[in-house]
Image 1 (cartoon, rainbow, N blue to C red):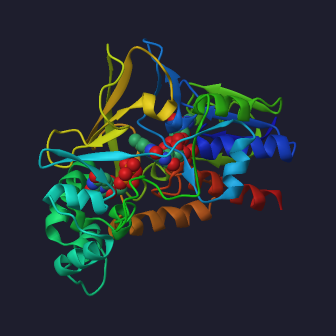
Image 2: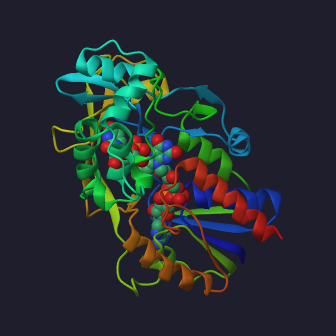
Length: 362
Ligand code: FAD
Ligand code: UDP
């Protein structure tokens, strides 16, 4: 007899399992159809002995002290500020676009003030910023938009930026200074022994039973439980009653090279060439020292595991119909990136799970 059946052992399911078991004394059965815990944040040592992220690079950053401190109960942190270069016109240039990006691209020596004027002279005003094209073109103009954003976005989403909500490219700031960090958050760090160790410690509670390699549908009728928390795709839960919610997928090509480093930055983006969007070299993220190095190439695709909800108005509308169903389903709570159809980072998923827990405890 369990108090909760939790579907999905990613951040959403694992945080809720930990809180319900350790704070509220509930008995929890946590199931995942994958053969491991951690969801998309799962990491492991590959054949060469390098720590890699199976489902692409996961860099932790947050402005929430509460989230950072909560996760800090289960891991020590290694300070890490992420940096990315973009391959444009034969150069590797800092992205987010900053003062150095523009000066190096055009061979200029602008100051921050002059860069502001440079952008203003090229920006195309729009009445209201609706799409991912509007955000960039209205701020820095069409040329930089085309060089850095249009091709990458078309590859990543299979859609033109003009067909995607503004929130997608708005994730990447435009800077007037020389700050070349990818994120500006207060807390930027990696779990010092990796994500899977963090999850191991989070779930090491006698009230939590973990069942891996099992779909909840094959388990639910064999155990008894009072309530369910579901963190898988919301449309799948309701047997696609209103049709499929689009999720963008990726194919990951992991490679190991017999040399200490592969590229000059943790991530190199390819907005204009190659079918892949970016290459990540894990050593930079993990701080591991090793004579070899492992990287991952990301090839966006439609079919495969659902990784990215696709932010655009018609999808939000379809999700609203599923959400109404979810709200009307007694005894089941929906949380996480797939079940609430939100393009959330890890810290946002943790915050959402802690908020749901606070509600359940009442
Ligand atoms: P998930 O991690 O997807 O977990 C859901 C789990 O539910 C899965 O393990 C799945 O197997 C299981 N499940 C689904 N259906 C069933 C079923 N029927 N039965 C049993 N189990 C089921 N965030 C950041 O903060 N920083 C980053 O750098 C970053 N990089 C990313 C890179 C990529 C390529 C991707 C795809 C995401 C990235 N994210 C990043 C986002 C991050 O992965 C998510 O925010 C977070 O992992 C979501 O956690 P979750 O628990 O909601 O979902
Ligand atoms: N983007 C882009 N060029 C880049 C980096 C990002 O066009 O060099 C756009 C692209 O649409 C991408 C979005 O900005 O999907 C958000 O980028 P982010 O790095 O946050 O994506 P994630 O890490 O979530 O895949």
